[in-house]
Image (tube, rainbow, N blue to C red):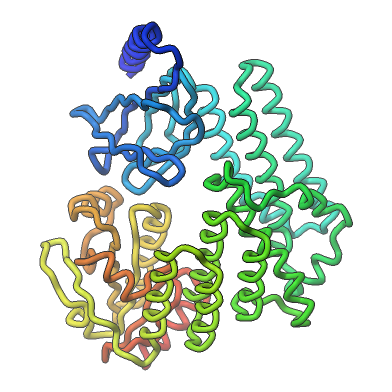
Length: 473
């Protein structure tokens, strides 16, 4: 492996030197690497949600690709439903190696441009652990919490300064690195009232130190440069939810915050519409919050009201049509009604109608390669439930459009058999008919093929109680 990367580095250097003599301006970069345990034979390279190219792996699961007319900045490479951001600048010859069984944790960069990208992947992994720690800190009082998260930010700034003094990175790197630190810090402030155990969120906000949210004066809600940036988007979601708490409290003096409240969700859409003018940022936030509400609501009238608000504010015609269809699907899958008919494919590649499979109390759950942690955790949970409730049939459905063999390999490689495991025959149509969102959605069906619960979650504390109710129905 060391020899391979050394060889590629030398090769890229030679190519670069040759091209440098013929090009007045250097506006290209190389990206290459090796993928261990690949789930497809290609990677997809994108920038700002636009696909640049689909790059095939060779017979040794390696590739080397030249990006011509480079637009320096953050790019995304994806493989088998997993993805990661990389920073590419002129003359970079970036190489990576990863194992799909441990995608982010195994990712290591070499070649020119490796230091900045190793910095970012290490920061990404650190932030994942930090978020769990932050949620624990949220139980502290506001003043103490602020001191703790301020300390975390100071530590990150110190680490960036040390990196900068040692490697003298570009202004572009520093701009992104500083944004990572700032918006991670801002997120930790915005999440506080939601993570705090107190139910009266308005009272929690009023108890905070006066300078707790001073940074809000500096926020650009229409930052096109950061519009596809994870930390920025995560911050915006919590910030707008937080701000909506205050506006909602003014006309609905409810002691207990309810994120499922129609009034609160209408307030949030209204706030987004008033604060954000950038179409991409605005439409993504409107879509995210509207879909989140509808996926948990069983009230047809409220769904129609929120949909109307979304349609009035969104400028994305494709999203508007999709949301309207999703709302219709949600309103069709009602408790007491028959489950809509869709076709499934078993691992013998036989096409079957779903209602033909249901002859006893049934749990219908879904999974995707994209959500690998959910795939593992849900299968372990269902394995446990199958032992406790043998009278219940547990059906697991993969919603991806990948070939059957990919799902088979993942199931077998993870130690799960394919009994009552299926794929959707027409994923795009079926996920819409069953309104499969979020991935944790689970449908309970009684022995008469009637929907007993159109939207529950196997990890809910009420799930086993719901299961007993299904059995005794």
